[in-house]
Length: 147
Image (tube, rainbow, N blue to C red; front, top):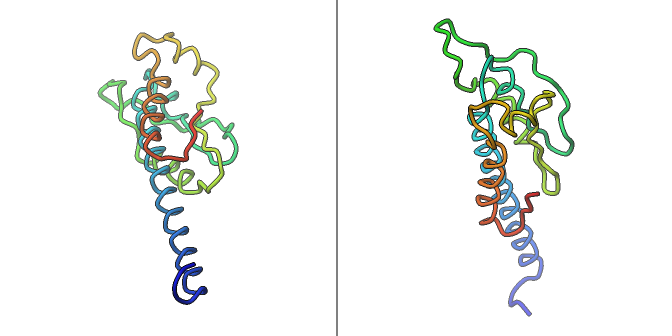
């Protein structure tokens, strides 16, 4: 039996639980953002449409297509960086992640699976590698499950 006021003990335990929860969510959000960046930067690029269509959603899978993608620059270089706007939009979704929610990283373009399987010679298996890296990062968080 703890020594002292039971109400104070109860209050302190509740605060400790809240601090732990926020720290854990912060870690999950950071790993998710890192994984998203890895997926986006690893995506094969032709026009930028595929790279710009990675979506993060909490709770349920986002089924939207992004038609305002980051196009090639005037120099003709096709390996453009991920735009800040794209990352910021997805960061907003990551911030919505709650305790028990699933977080989805998806690309709804019909050719996404073919690119993952090597239809483009640029980076076959980029999503699988990002997923494996995410599993390793999440492994240090004791109660997070990655499927």
